[in-house]
Amino acid sequence: KKRIFSAIQPSGSVTLGNYLGALKNWAALQDSYDCIFALADLHTITVRQEPAKLRHNTLEAYALLLSCGIDPKRSPFFLQSHVPAHSQLAWILDCYTQFGELQRMTQFKDKSQKHADNINAGLFTYPSLMAADILLYQADLVPVGEDQTQHVELTRNIAERFNNAYSPTFTMPDALVLKGGRRVMSLQDPTRKMSKSDENVNGCVYVLDKPEDIMRKFKRAITDSEAKVHYAEGKAGINNLMDIYACVTGKSYEEIEHDFDGKGYGDFKQAVGEAVVEHLRPIQERFAQYSSDKAYLQQCWDAGAEQVSRIANRTLQKVMKKVGFVL
Ligand code: TYM
Image (cartoon, rainbow, N blue to C red; front, side):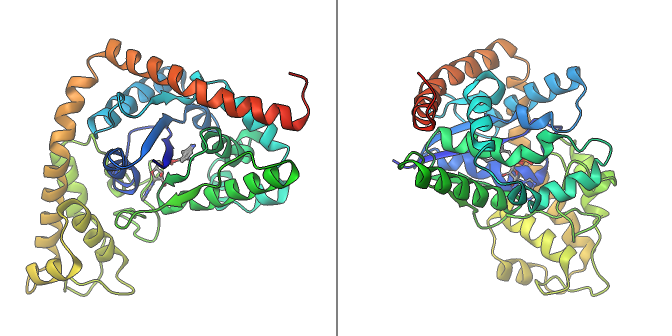
């Protein structure tokens, strides 16, 4: 079976973009692949966090991912900070990553604009920590949204450089960007990706939003001055709503265009909101259960860390030996 690794940052509430772009697929992938999942909390502190909030967000994200169908019995699901090999390999990989490569990362460029008062070294070397996450487990495939593919590409370059310098050590990973939800856009500015850092609260839908908030956000979604529901160039708002609707209902663009023929944008936005609410309802119900059982969550992440440490340490030892460290 092929190995899959992926992670998400516990940097705030989980968005509909995270869900449709990544999490929704993770659960399904467990049937056909050998999966390992993590909360990338080391990555989260590249932006200043309030400690109590980080703890809260980590617990919430863990419970929510279980609610989305991640089964920790089948797929080890752990916290990155619990497995020291991630930091250890990241340092080594830093020494095999070029300054210029990191400088070209679009996420670094975006984030250093957004957090101009805290452009720390971790924000810069973030991609080599992500490379360590992936390479430690010899992952074949890395399911991510489109915004992370550049980092997976860099991971391949680092792996190839290391393999060429010594001998084959790391499996070459491929990004797995699944159709639908690859890039969910802000409801208020459909030219930008939906993100927790959206200044406009109506731009970003959260998986744990109350139904009335979800409905309000969709009803206020920015569209265009035409009034026909169809997928076309220059209709970023409608295209985004159609993508979201297709993702949660399984309908094709043609079916959607047919269903809303002769109807206005108001009707369509209402329908998208309702479909999202219905889709998220069972997840929210399971979340209410999981989030109230911290002992269970802890048991799951402890078991996960223990299981993956064995694999991670094996890779780390191999790397240390090749580099020339005395073991
Ligand atoms: P993060 O936490 O920003 O996002 C988690 C996942 O959600 C996807 N995503 C989106 N997909 C579609 N539309 C959007 N608007 C949208 N916003 C987010 C992301 O592509 C991602 O798949 N660096 C990673 C976490 C990470 C990781 C890893 C991922 C750390 N180590 C190793 C894979 C492998 C991140 O910050 O994702």
